Length: 294
Image (tube, rainbow, N blue to C red; front, side, top):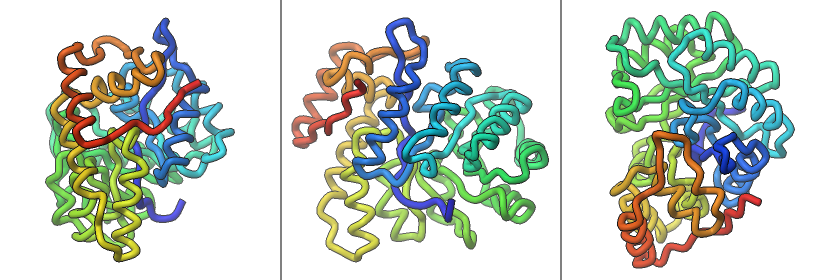
């Protein structure tokens, strides 16, 4: 894969009623949102409930994903705290010719830049052909990347540390490294980020905003007048009033009941909040593109 840039969705995982991962429909959902405008998709990020999905299901999906018609457009997440499990899943992915990964530092424990550098160093020592997008999201893992830490990792591993998804938003305005992708985690940061020299976005709500996000991106690249950015930001701000995973699944469940299935402790929005979400999206004249999972 060349330098990672453009519109990437942090794709959802689709579950059956018994909460087993529906591999075929999860892959078809990812393919569909690429068809609708995304340059690529992150599989098994936090939006994909990765921390809650079993190792065996992840391996099974990777095996099937290797046959996808969009195989070269995926970033693979792991969702593990365990270093060894992270490395093992990455080795399996690499054996299937997936070499681009989205990796967050472990959650729960307190640590600093030195320990983070050691964590990624051990991964790269084990899988030297990997290309890693750092996942900067203090809200989820408790650690926030500093500019100096990212620069040190890139200096140490220029061929392996190739970008960052910035969902803490402390990097995208000031971090610029040659041949290194900076991707904010929200559509509200897309246009501003592009103007500053960022490379695109990786976001949860691109599961439903792929075509609008792509228009904003393409219009910027082609130096056209922006006509869709205000609506794109308003849609994201509407979803941001709620838990994003719950909001996305609740919104999409009106088209297909399979989106109602979430792994505990996640849940759909309560009916009052769902009605508010739908009402505010209706005011924006935002309708869901066809996302039929079956």
